[in-house]
Amino acid sequence: MTKNAVPDTEQPIQNERLLLILLAVVQFTHILDFMIIMPLGSQFMRIFDISPQQFSLIVSAYAFTAFAMGLGGAMFIDRFDRKHALLVSYVGFTAGTFACALSKGFYFFLAARALTGAFGGMLGALVLAIVGDTVPLKRRASAMGIVMTAFSVASVAGVPAGIFLAATFSWRAPFLAVGGIALLLLFLLYIYLPSIRQHLDSGEVQQDPLRVMANIFRDPNQRLALLFTIILMLGHFTIIPFIAPYMQLNIGFSDYQITYIYLVGGTLTVFLLPYFGRLADRYGNARVFTVSSLFALASIFAITNLPAVPIAVALCATSSFFVVASGRNVPATTMVTSVVTPESRGSFMSVRASVNQMGLALSSFIAGLIVTERKDGSLGHYQYVGYIAIAMSLVAIWAARRLKEVG
Image 1 (cartoon, one colour):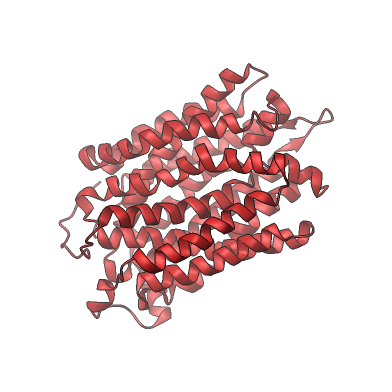
Image 2: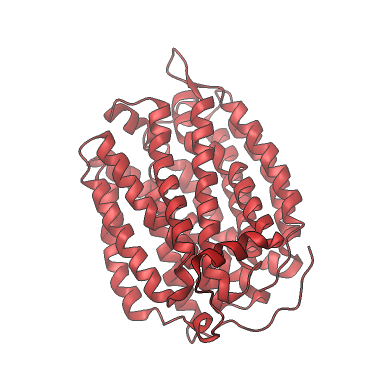
């Protein structure tokens, strides 16, 4: 990958560490809100009396609305202070999460997931835009490693806690808990998040919404970054919605034992994700992404072809996937934030979030079409989902090595 000289246009932040922690907690809540659906999949299928295909719609609903909102928001998002945009999006996300907790049936819950996704997708784009605007490229991967540990903390603490709450009280309890955390965080963001508007001060923000979109899709580097995003999602998320159901129905995990997947895998990534960031800053994003992706191929194959094995063996397979698949996302995300200058970063990251959610929705939808329920209650054809993920991961390696960092 070619590295161009880039101007020092980032906005200096007095307490960068506090900023990264706040952004990591924002990521934690909206990632946990999305992730908690997967380990509760068998419960939702039982409680709502729905099929695996209908369950995949619950997962996809969040992603499809995030896709639509991201495209619409991309036309306007760079016109506003990043702080104000983040607060408005987080209010909508919090309201959607509480709506999930109050749902009375499958269709109400489906609509609530769609509402949550509409704002949750914007949050991810804004967090990455803020990191890109405030942290110099030479140490941006390390900052991304800190923010992206939110996924690991959600896995190691959030998901097991959510599963415990659901098993002890009700499936509504995890959503009430996430909504409560989000409500508290809203006040902290209002007080401690600084105004971030250097991209506005330059006077180069595009005001015409159609030109905003045209500029993105006219640039071959940005087009490639969007293609890379959707390919990587197909190589990553395709297998995720059915990991927990597969481990329960095919391997024999109980409702409580399924927490071990997230506890072990999440603990490892909490410690290792910042290390992936430091490696990427030192050796290059494309190189670290390539090596991580090659290791991910073996993990994907192991999980999707796993026969009836002891739980400890199954945990080795799932934990290896957590580490290498999450690890490769650190340099991947850093590369994507760097293909555009600050004046257009919010719009591009919003479109990128839409493309990411489209890939997520397609991944879940494709998996739902392929995975079947056997007569004995176990899941079939999961290995074919794995083969798709492996093929897409190889294509992602090709795309990553052709991206250029410009800002």
